[in-house]
Length: 484
Ligand code: HEM
Image (cartoon, rainbow, N blue to C red; front, side):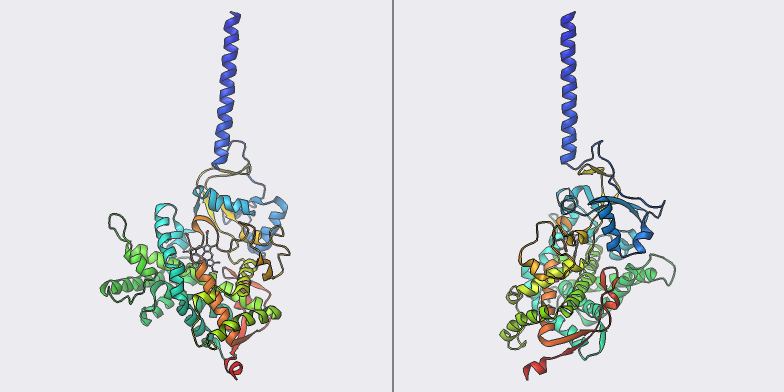
């Protein structure tokens, strides 16, 4: 009998130990895989009022202050409720890496349906998995080093045309001028030089109506901006259909060019199936959108920062004049190799992107209950890595509110500088954007002078931060003076 109890007790002990071990192993596994354990608790933070959450607080103040005060109060991970969505904000490089890179499969891209409708549901940034990877590879191929090398003369020509159109000393909205440049570069990158002028003007007209609607309240009443944008989107789609049909008809007229549209049109899967016209159109519109206001906002900030730092401007001018002289006083076009050899200008660009942090954060949605550092991110909640908070943290960037390109003499700590995001959805256009900035700065400082008109320290959100009124400035050419 005693023996029976003894073996019974040992058996029970083994079962309990095994169960505890399995529980522990399962917790460890769930932790390692990012899945939530029962101990995980919601992050600190306030969910605000019923329904509206903290939306009013966000919109009634500078959004940077909204995020920074909460980070100070709650730490690097906190919860809130915005526009009826329950959100977890993440303000550390490790947390951003967790969401965007190491556990990216647990977080899907998420956009309001109204915006998805305007861009088109087949655009790559709404997708995850095989379709996304396929499309992304095509976009990356068209924006890789070989493609960019061939694009330098086009970007150079677009920058020169933008500045010529502004020249004359009259006051203009810098952001609008830079939008002209980023649109022209976007178009030549996607369609190449052989795009018919009529098609280009048609695209421009409809694109800007779609863009206005994209940034407006999605109200479908007749005459509303959103409704007009829906109509203009149909116009864009029709024009793209005509361009594709014309290219199919004149297959051999590419003249050696293979730009993004050609890449989309030529792609076939293993069974020989091509992309549909809707998939092509949605992705063309998607890339045009992704390339537009982003690049134009950063360019606007570069003009402001250079203007506000005259000594730095002189040093940049000196660097660029070397290239200008090499190119026979700007008569020869810039080369790819020359754009790789502008270290100071490159640092100015990096610092402008850090300071302005025009993409302050991005959105994902948890596809399951996820645990991060003991905190629960429930399935369906939005997750927002806060790039700006990371870029403006003294922990990673000393004296973060001071514009100082010299900080980029050394590489930033890995994962702390994310102007182009990170992981599977990181920006495939980053090198093109930087090329555009280098070329514009070259043309600007070697051949023009500019002067900001009126106060420029207030910031407006359109939706990216830009100096209020788009940075009013006048610009005039000095080429004749320099040559004299
Ligand atoms: C200064 C200019 C730019 C900035 C700051 C910028 C920033 C970003 C960021 C942060 C993302 C990732 C968003 C996320 O993870 O949710 C992104 C994605 C993307 N960007 Fe850019 N971008 C710029 C210019 C461009 C240009 C010039 C192009 C194309 C010609 C482009 C095309 C794209 C595309 C297609 C995606 C989606 C990638 C995907 O989902 O796989 N961007 N960009």
